[in-house]
Image (cartoon, rainbow, N blue to C red; front, side):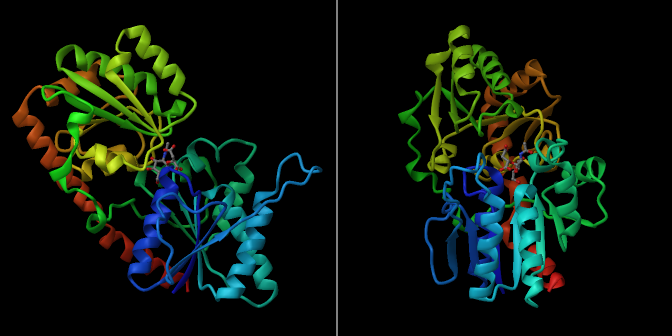
Amino acid sequence: MKIAIVCYPTFGGSGVVATELGIALSKKGHEIHFVTYKQPVRLEHLSHKIKYHEVLVPEYPLFHYQPYELALSSKLVNTVKKYNIDILHVHYAIPHAYAGFMAQQMLAEEGISLPMMTTLHGTDITLVGSHSFYKPAVNFSINKSDVVTSVSESLKKDTLDIFDINKDIHVVPNFIDFENLNDDHSDCQRELVANEDEKIVIHVSNLRKVKRIDDVIKIFDKIQKHVKSKLIIIGDGPEREAASDLAHKLGIRDKIIFLGKSNEVEKILCYSDLFLLPSEKESFGLAALEAMAHSVPVISSDVGGLSEVNIHGVSGYLNKVGDIDGMAANGIKILSDENLLAKFKVGARKTSEKFDVKKIVTEYEALYQKMI
Ligand code: GMT
């Protein structure tokens, strides 16, 4: 099949999933066309099976806001016609499902049919999409999609609760490409960041309010009082400065390394002992799944789809949002007992194996087939 994929090309989970899916589909012989404003960060190599089409939105002084949806839908129309695309798969409803629907309508005028799948990722529903500024348009474009998928049962439920949906929502979880996973632990450079007797705690996100970065710092503060440890924070976002200030205030700034946006996450997970994800909302928690695939246990909140990914007592622990003491206590429990840590490392990896891309990609292919 020839599949056009629309996504955010950034470090965010939805863009990562879209890119990894495109790569996995191309390995199965499909021709993939990414249509977005920048080459996706996880897309290192283009090939005859993977192409990238840049959506350009030239500045024009009359426009206070540049019309990205318009440029995207026009680019989709041109790409579909030029490459005879069979299917459009948009990731993240806003504004992609809306632009996709417009492209579909324009193509229909010319007698070209373009079935569209929309994959809902989380904040497009629970945070941004549910706002009255966007809600009618998001509701409309979800209902106009030929197939709708969500990355967890929890997100499906939220979508049905928040919107007026007249479509089936298929749950297709996020995944890991184990064949491509760099889990060769032979050149782990743990000594670069910590002493031999120190444990390494890690957090990866876009450092937005919804991730509760303050909780990450406070949980780590309690952990490091019992277990010699360092905290590595990967990612960048609006809460970074406040987190650094809080660490100063608590007197633990020297135990925390802020790495910013990084393409080296796998290398760091290789020597990490515990992943913290105390989010306020989390439809899936791809960052936690990636940690688990690298045998890193997870301490997370129990919101959204996290309990579908992180299995309490097996791959880590789940606590209520804001339960800093509980999360710290569970972290201390895992980190202060080498046998327990080893058991959780195995449990984390085993749990992640349920999300093998090989299984998930066939679920998407079956849905594509159904749309055609
Ligand atoms: O976590 C983020 O804020 C980024 C966001 C995105 O849209 O890229 O992540 C959402 O989609 C990911 C991929 O499906 C999920 O793993 C995240 O849980 C979800 N984020 C939230 O629901 C807050």
